Length: 234
Image (tube, rainbow, N blue to C red; front, side, top):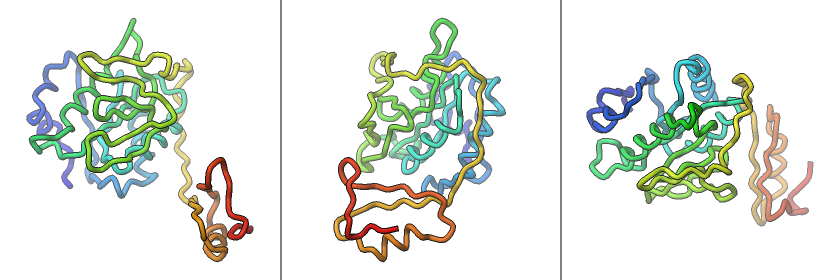
């Protein structure tokens, strides 16, 4: 991993210089693999947006695909009353590879982040743009590692689809509250996720439920919320 170099990126994607917009870039001095994503990085991202909120019309975050949905979901709740687009994007193949999908993803993500109608931003929420589709960030999950179409949003329609033109799904777009941006920075790491499966034992559920320091428990149950009575006790 190397620190992000925007000048090098513009050499790889000369189309970025054809935008009639001003682009600025901020890079972390020590980049991380997305598998090492942490709440402290979400806090840093939220603070960067907070500090630069009045300077820019929109924000694009380049992110590894493995934890992109986690970051998009976290930021969507951290950035309360967001009135500008925050678009996360990335690629399945590195930007230097000839067949990379990162080129189109980045170009269109920037176009969406800068899009305005009647002087107001078209998108005012945290989104993921990947393989010609814009999704609400906190409704996505990565379902595929072998194809460019890596993300799905099963419970909410796409916000936009890029073809010859970018077609926005206006009824699905979040309406801005008009209130001042409020950034929530306090996050909690001591969360336990318990995924139930047939035959899970009491000793396993007990160990997870009573994990030292655990402050919250997220249950992944069957169907509409069913759970085995044989493996469940507090």
